[in-house]
Amino acid sequence: MTLLEFLISCAMLVYIFKKAISGRESELRAETCQLETLTKLLQLRLALLEEQRSTKQELTAQDQQLTALEQKLTALEQQNTTCTHCGQDP
Image (cartoon, rainbow, N blue to C red):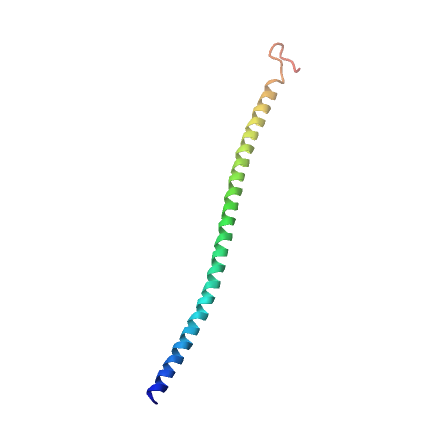
């Protein structure tokens, strides 16, 4: 093998190696884009879940308030079943 043949072989190997690397780079770029998109979708999903949790907590609090008011109303209705003056049902 002459020096020229050796240099040509080296140049071909370098070319093949660079081609393989550049092909892998484009695959990595595509995978990176997919991961970034997935990350954004997961962030949006998380924000939606947090909003739903907040809404659920608000509804639970309102439901508890409503239950307390219903209990107070029931207690008032029971108090008003007999007349405080004569002791008879109104």
